[in-house]
Length: 574
Ligand code: C2E
Ligand code: MG
Ligand code: MG
Image (cartoon, rainbow, N blue to C red; front, side, top):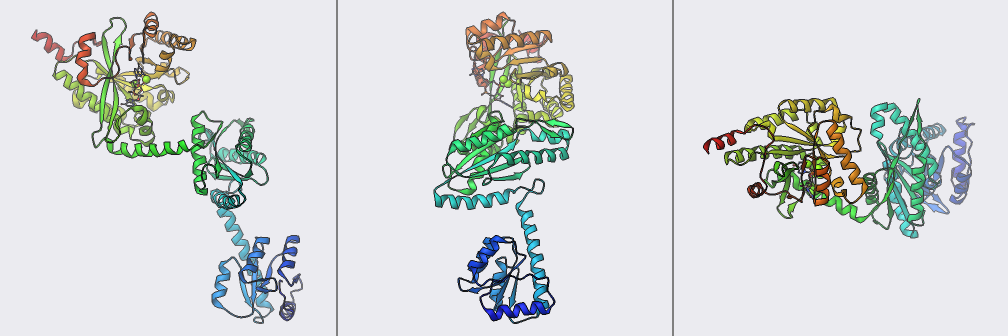
């Protein structure tokens, strides 16, 4: 009881005693200063608080009790009944309100009991609202609340705050293969380990899923933050014992510093998140400090995404074609269709800038269909104009291949234009094929059956096991440009290109080398029996109207072993 008035105190004590509340162990103090000393020393079940004390009054009294012991329930004692004030005080987290001299000991006791219970309920609720139920560490809300407070403190004291955003690497795989329960177990163990990495003043929180955050207050600068990040990475080096299994997992960490990167506390987590993505892109299991550039990149990315959404409808895409030259006869055997985007404001945009955005946003699927359709239309047009009908390679994105009706759609489009399926070559990247699912296998078999050719694009970049080469019905390997570029420059290029060519030979696959730019590369490829080359040395991709000139200069062959309809017509008319 914090009550300076002796009469009031005595009356209350007497009422309680009359009720037989011997078990109530009442400690009375007469000032807020004494109250605070007592509250700090002992845990009390409840505080009966008079608001008009010699050294504290009104809301201030409530606040001082609450900040000394946030978990103690409070009943305010007041001299008069003032409804408005009562409601207001209850809104400030006080559990009850008693008018002095009113009510007997029983009412007071009941009020005490209710107040204690209500406080407990409130605490439980706020715990649930502020803590993660699985790991019992603070959740995102608690973290952002604390972060906001910490930034106010840091601003006042001119200190810095480090914010670390952690995301476990490939946690989804653990969840998918071992099940959710093991996933949860792993998360709990991760938290135990993370706890050993943070100092007592640091705040560790689970933001959701496999994402965690750490707030480091009072840091001197990036070096000590870096040290903390390194600590965390080290903590993940030993595998975790999940049930009977040892599971290894790593984490990627994005770091931002307040107030260096931003003065806005809410933007801090976002920045750290962006930096975390960068850490993932840089190969995971590492950390990355936020840079303003990342923010600009994200903005540009969103702009591209928005614009891509309209590009098809506005007919902003076109195709260019790059010839593939046969090394045996030096003639053009085939073409690769490559997308170009005529952006209304930015002009010509190359695939390097928009394909990955299109893949992430899903726009790539309709775009891919558009490409195939445009190629078929083009082939029909060439046929009508009696141009050489060469096979055209079309790039297929992973997401397209994942469409359950992809093969049917391809068949339908080819059929609609009446194009010979052997004129279509679908380029799939190595990454797509490495997923090696039954569904992909079936799709490819179907496509093969209708006569379409299948190539593996960017071959060699997937550091794969090469099993899929045997499993899938593949016709062609395309050596990635980066390896061709290394030819004659270093051992690596020579080794890889040589290896691909010998693998291809052993599996009876054809090989196309991409990005051939000079004689050295060409000489090596020719010497090792590469079938086709594609690259600047012969021609960069060109607009369809430039093809006739190229054809005239180099000559063309089609490898299909029989003449197309138009060629027959042409032959007969001579
Ligand atoms: P890719 O399929 O590996 O295509 C080869 C890329 O290398 C093309 O770039 C081509 O212009 C470029 N290239 C060819 N020879 C040389 C050379 O000698 N030197 C240099 N420096 N570059 C050369 P592009 O057209 O910018 O396309 C880049 C990538 O974008 C393609 O790589 C492909 O993965 C993707 N892409 C292009 N069009 C499509 C499409 O219609 N659908 C899908 N899904 N992806 C596409
Ligand atoms: Mg390609
Ligand atoms: Mg390629």
